[in-house]
Length: 133
Image (cartoon, rainbow, N blue to C red; front, side, top):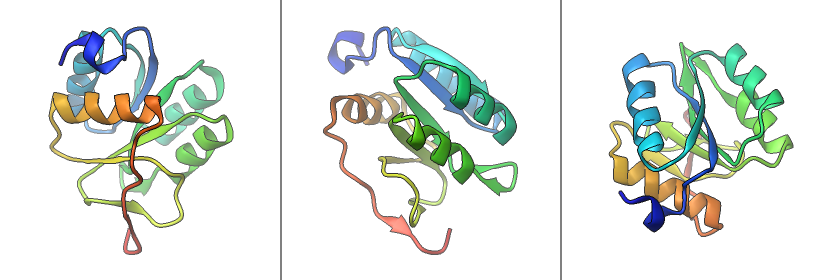
């Protein structure tokens, strides 16, 4: 994934992921595109702190953090106008959560870059929500 193709260079992206290796992989993928990674945040508390204080262009948010849903983080980001991309193993984000594209775990570098580029350009399509999550 080339930086110029995705338009991500210089963007500040919050990565919220409780699985250490996935967080490191996502951060490395984004950094290879010239992104300034904020975090990664491994807990809701840390994610909320970063969401409240950091200058962000977008966020990559795991739906489930250590057994708890990350809705408080999504709402904090939405209040600040920060676009959100959800990463989940469930195939959909929960109903009534802030809008944003969803990428399924395990995801590829192309999925991360493509979804974030679409999100930042305003061309991301909303994903279906699941009532069961």
